[in-house]
Length: 123
Image 1 (cartoon, rainbow, N blue to C red):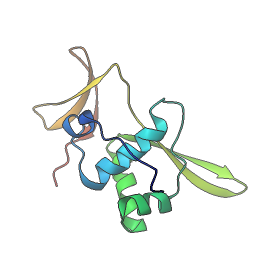
Image 2 (cartoon, rainbow, N blue to C red):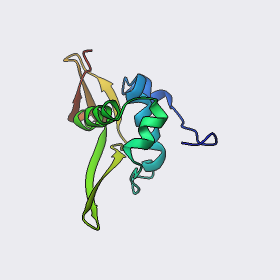
Image 3 (cartoon, one colour):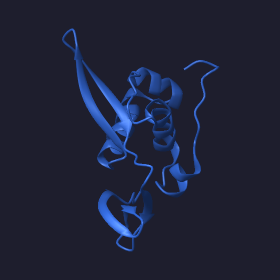
Image 4 (cartoon, helix red, strand yellow):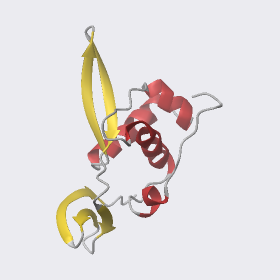
């Protein structure tokens, strides 16, 4: 990350997805690369370590948590025998995210519930 790089944290990332800390920053970074729903974040864990000012283990744990919550999609790509992880945000602009009485976030279109996408963070 250079001095000229920046990220945008949008209100819905906090209010609807209830992200905070390194999860919020990581999601915002990856959203910046993948918001067109076609491109993937191809940065290294080193890039995230520097952006978050954290250890490699912490950066990897944050990515894993966001994948587990259904907020990031992960794919592996092999280039000349080396496997690289790629990430993009799981987001459909026609849906909204709402907290249900059962303590989960549900992906809903209008008033119809489509599917449960993640469990509420209880930490």
